[in-house]
Length: 472
Image 1: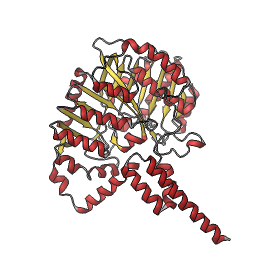
Image 2: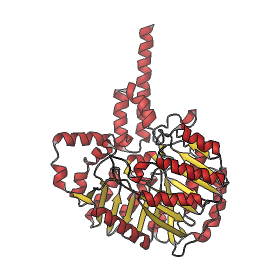
Image 3: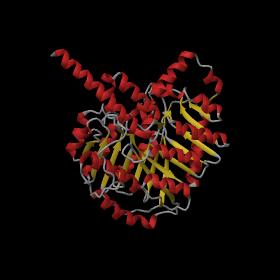
Image 4: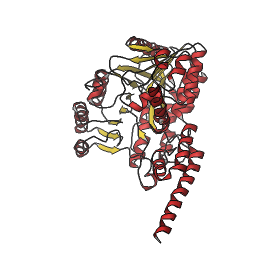
């Protein structure tokens, strides 16, 4: 009897492995990932089946987007406020911008102003001043919040806002902020702040969605001012980490109708996390003198298309003279690698900036498996020297720039909820150009010989790390 049950268990496990392999074949977003999962599921199903259902799910299910096709309360509110946006919708006869609009499912709006915030002090001084000026509500969303000196500052500003009668909504990723003390959250909640984790695996039906993250960093005040970019909340982002040293990052402060795009992304995330539809102001606010056109591009694993990857590829194909990219985690898929090489081959000044010293070893090692081919094609690769470089910025021909939370890796392209501001404005692009020129002056350029002459063991380790890219 025992041997019969044991044989039945083995049969069931192998059957689950075979069925999961079929699902991986039909739904994996990359051929690299599909092959890896299929081989593992068929040969070692005892380990691979549970791993696949945690790490291999291709889509984030159950997320309701106001920009989607379902008739929801969110969608009806969205339709009403989009009518109010119509007077501020910018000219989209430029097909480059029209493609971004379609990816974002949000309009390019006029009447905006974007302020570059370089490094931590400028960013958090601006954020805290915004919270202190709030009259109606503050929306706060970070991937990482730490219970340290900077986290305490954020909490104090939010508590003061609540005491003034301002509504505060605080959303955090439970994996990114897993070390956040329960007392920190309790103190916020007891004071009247609405607090919620993102809950990627919310409910029994979605219990296996553990590998997805909400990587967005959004702060909105009264629907008129908003912040997004690379910064989380922790003293290391102020350069106070002994291993990382000075922290190089870029954030944005936005004002104008585009802030409603940030608000919409938060609104949808809050609805997923709590089931609530919160009451917010949806009237566009224009206060700038020299206005810019901006489109907000939310992206994530619930999208029908791979929005983040397509946005990056679109930026690459749009460049004619210059394409400068900064990313702390640089393991792009084959489509992005090919697009970058082709851009360099047609004479575009393609530059990639990465940190010299990693904080994620596997991702750092992965890059060495494809960097030689990129450098040989004419791409210039730079390593930032003074400290850890964490900014996510793309400059296109001094006519457009993108700043947000998207890294050039599989996790940002397919597993994370991200947010980007795409700004087709020459004046703003000039600012970004000058900022990145200073950063490149603080880098060392990698040549082909350095990459090619690495020892064999290093090449083998890099290649093995690259095979893990689909689940990193």
